[in-house]
Image 1 (cartoon, helix red, strand yellow):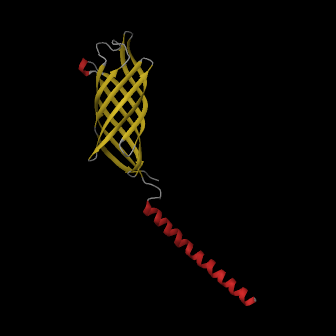
Image 2: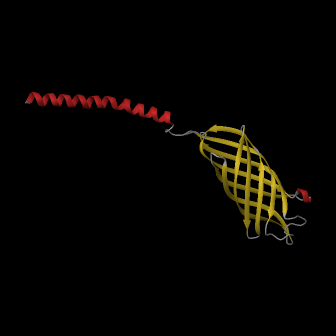
Image 3: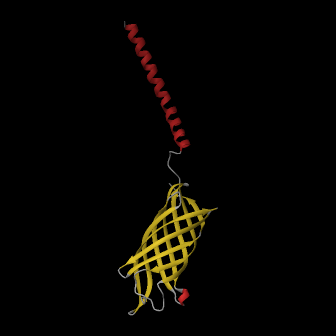
Length: 196
């Protein structure tokens, strides 16, 4: 009887030793499988994009004379600065952008506006954002700076590394609402991995 118990104990000890020896190998194989499947920590990438912007703004409910000698539809020309961070070519891109615009040149005027936004771009190119805007206006009381909040939605089309965005922007404040349609293109200026 003692011999049978001893034999079972030896067998059990051998099984435990075999499992303990196999555990590190199993963990290593699981880690390799995770890396192959892309389940490990994603590499984050930063990109800087910039390019021209052109479009027009419709001043929906502002008085016609809120800027002297300027109609309700105003051209817009400017430059787009964009900083993007995303997982390595996967998932959404999170972005910050700064867009100075100059409008009204067809009226012999220069109406500057400065726009800062935060937003996201999905893998299919659909994008949206929100942020503050500051512009210069002239009314019967003289020149003044006006602030507003804008909401933007649109889509970017990728043509061989050049992004062509088409964006609809609604900007509003107590003085009225403006709707802008902007397009242009953006070229990647820099791309670098983010240090873990």
